[in-house]
Length: 467
Image (cartoon, rainbow, N blue to C red; front, side, top):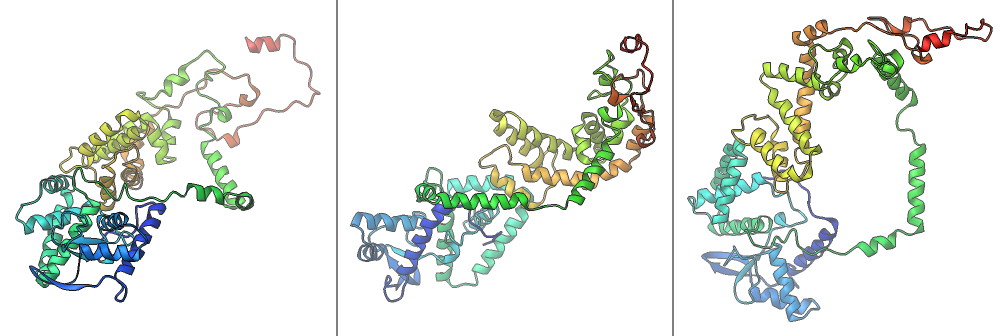
């Protein structure tokens, strides 16, 4: 089988219970005190077999439990796939008779569990479909068709892997092939149960550790927490010089774009009756101001958060036949910050429109991100496309955005942008000096501060200015 990494998706409390179960399995396989194995003919002679009655009797003798509890424990071990049946491999139950069973290899144990991904399940179904010439169970046919549609872009790889594993299996003995098929089938019955069957991985035993956690949080625990956070507050994460230099560079970059520090052109709408400042800086205007267009070159985020900048960037992407990237990013933003009641509907729409095979606005994301997104589609939520959105965002930021700033489209827009002329002086002290068009604020003379020795102004001066 194909492995795509290791790790466990189970909680720590459940893993603790399963670790005890695996310890019991190891004791059952002890050559001296464990269950006595035998060779039994099952189509062909198969070694290391035991019966359901052997499992029940061993648990009854070695575990301090009643007959009912011993049967339940044995049945639970089989449901988790630690022991699998050979006579009826589709039914993971304990039969207290001569039905043959075998211990599952540790490769398929829960503690060694590799993630049961859609790709691995597709390879298993494709291999089974080839072997049985399309004679799959109904729910397996449905899953096969669904996976064929969802991961159509990698289906050639799925078929190639299935055929390669079948070719390698033909070189094994018949008894080994039977054992391997039962092992793999037991694993997928646990991780991909049939419709209506109990998903043991989601509703299995969980240890209640709430009381234990409460007992740990005594005065010593909180003293340790306080000491840790006190040390963390006094520890410098970044050099002050580096932090201050970055702050200064940020202030210098945005100085001309700050209405308080550099004034508003053509007039300040907060202290005058003119509203032309709002009109010229509306979300969508025919001719933008030069300051607005220049700010798009500060960062890609500045471009995206400006509706006009995003519109101009879309026009550039349409010429490059990659406007679907920006459309996908906007759709993901709508899912993250939209209403909760429509999340599932929007997720389905985005997948069909941008990610599904043959999508009208298909976007190119890597196979690992696609696989993670497909896994998340089983339980849709508003952050399901977070990885795919970040992948497309970085693609636009590192590729399309630099080329847009160097394009003739951006240069023409910058040249045709307007620089408003100041129409009225302000009366507030901190805005007495005003930026003139294309003027360096560092060379702008500051007003002289009165030292109290100047002559008093005529009585009508203030009223004239205020009028």
